[in-house]
Image 1: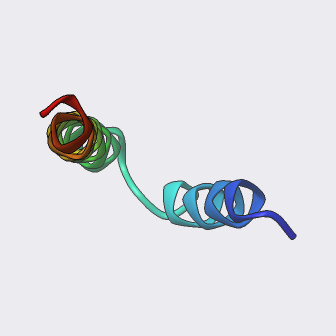
Image 2: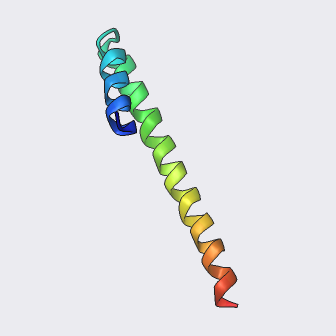
Length: 54
């Protein structure tokens, strides 16, 4: 089972027991966390590339 499939199954299981307000809050948190990770990924990549530009 791929990680994406496992995550999908976990999300479906969680959502089945939550009300819409909790789902909205969780979705917002996930979105913010993904943005944070993407930004840190960019910084790490740029720092890695900077070593070779010297």
